[in-house]
Length: 328
Image (tube, rainbow, N blue to C red; front, top):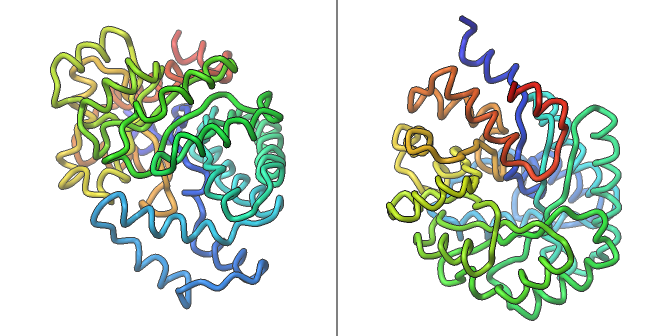
C-alpha cells in the first residue's frame, strides 16, 4: 500500500476554494512593493510571516487587504495567478475554480481590465500545462449591496470570462440575504452561484445562502453540522462544502486539527472537499491541507480518494476525461 502522502500527491483533484490574492507569498509581496513603489509596514518577508498569527477572521482580513496594495499592473496579477497555478499543477490539481476580489482593487483605482487581463493570461498559460481554470468573482460582504451591483455591472464586459459569483470577507453581521437581489441579477446573467457561509457565521447563514441566494455550493460550512435538519438538506441535495482545514486552524474556527470535522462530514455522507483558501497566509497549499488534516484525524486512503473524487464531482466545469477516469 502506498504511503498516504504518495496517495495525496498522485491523486488528481480540483481546487474549488482558493482566493488568488490569498496566494500572495511574502517574497512576491516585497518584490511587487519594490517594483511599484509601495511602502510596507514590514522590513522583511520573515517579519511578514511572523505577523501571520490571527485571533479571528477579521484580524486576518486586515492584513490580507493591506497585502493587496502591492498589486497594480496587469503583470502583477499575471505573476500572482501564474505562481499559484504552477503550485496547483505540482499538487496534481487538474481543475481550479478560482476566486478573486475585484472590489479590493478597483476601490484603489486599478481598472477592471488590468485585473482581468492579467488573470486571463495566467489562465491561458495554465490550460497549456493541462490544468483547466475558471474564475468566480466574489463580492465583499462588508460593503454595500449598491457597491456589489456596481461591481457586477462593471464585470458585464468580461462576462464570457466568468464562471460565477461568490460572497466572501467578514461574515458575522453580514448575512447572505443582504445580497439577495445581486445574486438574482447574477443568476439572470447565467452565472453560477456560491457563497461563504457557516465559517464564523451561524447555521442560519447557510440556510440563507441556500434558500435566499440559491447557491449551488457552500464555501466552508463547518457550522452547518450544528443543525441536523441542515445536514440532512446538504446530504440529500448533494450540496458541496468547500472545506479549508489549515484556514480553519489559523483562524481558530477549530481548536486544533484533531478537532476538525472533515471526517465527520464524510461519515454523515456530505459532499465535502479539501481546499487551501488563502495558502500564503495559512501555511500550506492543497496537498499540505490534505496531509496535515489526514494525519490529525486519521483519514484512510479510501477517504482521501473520496475527498478528491468529491472535488471533481463538485466542480462546475473541468476536465471531463479526468473526471470520468476517477469516477470509473
